[in-house]
Amino acid sequence: MAETAAYAVLDRALDEAAGINAFFEVVRAPAGQVRPAADLWTDGAFLASRIAAVRERLAGRAGRHLDDVEPRVAASIFFQGIASRVLSPAAAAALAGGVVPDQRALGWYTEGAGLLLARTGGPGVPVGPEPGAAADGLAEHVLQGMLAPLAGAVRAQVKVAPRLLWGNAASSLGGTVAALASARPGLAGAAAGLGAALMARPPLEGLGGPGRPGATMADSFRRSTCCLYYRIPGCGTCGDCALAGR
Picture 1: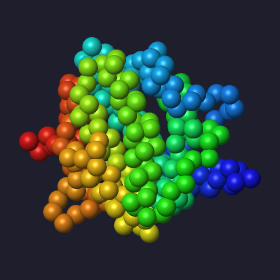
Picture 2: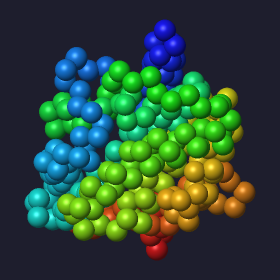
Picture 3: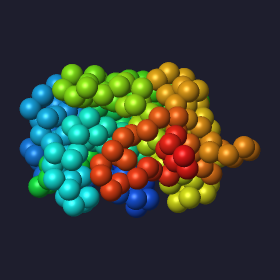
Picture 4: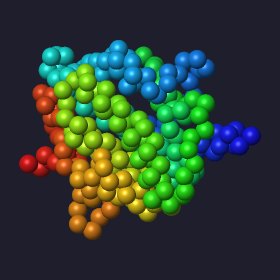
């Protein structure tokens, strides 16, 4: 009964967060069609196919030949997208519901060329509502439990610097905090505190922070690395990029 109640708490938190933007959505896919979260970093063929899909999509959007998109650029953008998709609902659930969805609670549903984050049978991990407890939960179960093994698997396939990948996760966290603060003003302070707590510890330490003096991560964010998107011909830097304005 306790696990059933915990499952319901996580469901409510995820459902409430889903309306913020697409990165916060966790779909309810048909039974038997959700792959375990760990498949993305343990199944090399599955991971390679997802990076290839991102490469094709980037080339199509830029109107360029596939060869114009370096594999490391595709791998970088792929990792940043996954980081946003797991950090966003996890942060919202931790702050609003006191529970962190771990890799037992999440999986992947493929829909055509897309890869969607989906719900599985796990109840998530309870955490305290204060930013420090939420940060501990996200650091253990999302950064280390999901993104760290994924970063290792990506780097085993494509030559890309670990600092760049973790900079992408920092950028994703910045977007998560800003979106949460805007959509849920009552959580703005807690969201900014959560972001600051995660950015103050490895593996995100030194990879970004508020974009202007006196601001918080809920107001602006500037990363200290670059995702390499600008290397696609005709494409520029992102708004939070360390190279922006140079």
